[in-house]
Length: 259
Ligand code: CO8
Image (cartoon, rainbow, N blue to C red; front, side):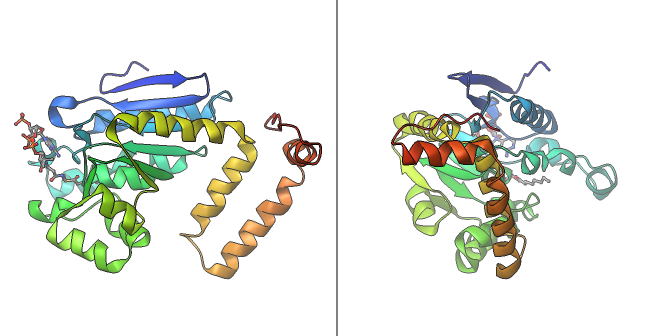
């Protein structure tokens, strides 16, 4: 697939990087961009050489939300019956390998929701997060009212959704929305370094870890712990578990084969 609104590349043959590329519109998310993003992520997910993915934007904007110009004239029928916007937003949830959001500048509305669909967020010190939909007479539509309270708690999530205010990188880190804040000029280096660390591990164990952590948001504690226990047991059937433990015991570096 030829991409127009994203740029796609790999680093070290192992990390798939998608750069959102509508700079004049601050990477406002439209259907074409979301289709392209979904296709690129799926293709990386299916590539055995790729161990981790990064989504990033420009210095000024990760993404300033869904494209307001495109949405402005849509009717209920357009968005509900004809599914003008929702059809391709959840693709990222089906990606099984880790996806890191490397965020600089604005991550607003659908842009903030997109970062929260990723597995974790590394933010530049100029990042700003927000769910300003209330100012447009709507509410978040891609999980903002659900993932934000899970990430930062009800008080701050309500504050953000009801006032539409932005949260800077320091507050986002304090609140648990982002895993790390780094200087802007180090953003991609840090994200890439984290991705390369992940790529060193067994892809099977990495996918199991991602699946288990995500299960915490879908289930109660007992069921979640049981799910984790069964995944843990299952990993003893992999060659990578034998390799990882043998390497530790024999004081050498593990060479995982994803088997
Ligand atoms: N959509 C379309 N165009 C945008 C958007 C957007 N979300 N954000 C910025 N732009 C455009 C501007 O219109 C402007 O274009 P032009 O140069 O042609 O006038 C250009 O980007 C630069 O923007 P500004 O001049 O406004 O730049 P500033 O630095 O002054 O301000 C802001 C930056 C604060 C980010 C400002 O642009 C802004 O407030 N943008 C809108 C943010 C917003 O409201 N986002 C939420 C949108 S609604 C949404 O995301 C719902 C998601 C639902 C998903 C549901 C899926 C299932």
